[in-house]
Image (cartoon, rainbow, N blue to C red; front, side):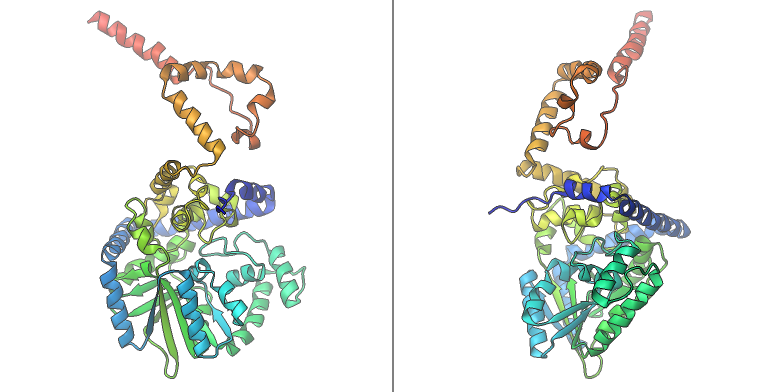
Length: 468
């Protein structure tokens, strides 16, 4: 049975119809974009930092096997157990075996997109392991049985009444609580006993340093530090692309990460983990899950430079108005639209088309990923692989025929005004015209550029030639 493509357009339409949520989502993320711009203008070396960050990541990816081996050797010297997971299934099996060996039945964890990517909770919970997200946004999403809708702010699409309703259902709090501070406090009260009694803790890792065999976790709530240090067992799940060669490189990325993500100079907690605490145990699971394959894709390998700041999402007009859940994937927004098809080309074939191709995503990316160019290239690949929907394929085919014949194209343009004013509405507004589903067709101009140029420029050139 073939996997159905994600219907992004339909899901986006449902989100847009909820005006209150859509407006808040749009305004909140645009505010983050503006704060990012303010930070950019404060640093005169901003573009130099971007270029440096990009160069470091490209160098690392070009020498990834050597740096991974260097990290493993140094991490083992530090007392860290290092595991390799080829895919999500192997990652889940490794984590499950570590927990089983320690008799761990409760796991607290900080935000980790890789565990979402591997569907780890869905694997562990039927095996008797209670997994609790300690990040506020992730916990809200977990209680609501939803994926994160944003890489950095997982529940950004929710309003305060939404959270109050969820907490009332699970924590028996006041469903009419309208205070964000009060709701955050309720989560703190609910989380602390779980954290203090947990059998094991898990974090992700923003950066992995080959030179020192250490990894760095950046958070604003301190939950990762609690997850890592309170239980006697710490498991870190990290994608193999999060590597940097030297500790000195961190000076570039730490300055870029939070400024790009939230418009703040630095995260509240930037924690370096170099080895286990006395009497504790630390494991690092390095996850491939398609990354090696993507590294070999000539047009798309640079997407592995991503440091998961979410800046491209905050600036994207399509993402801001359609919501992250409409993408139907762990990674949403522009970066998701170029990453997701590498996991399942058919399932995520609609996502590269969820873009205006304005290039803003590329302009704000701190590691200079050419996101909008990769979106265009994915469109070409999907067309070549026959992964376009029937209507889009036929419309594009007809448009190609029309635009490939100048005489026919000009005749069609010249007849547009007559057609719009005389044809029955059902001919113009139907299922073959998705534009007309949400808006009126634009009224055609009185004169095309071609006819204007012919009338004004060609005549002038002709007269100049005759005068000469």
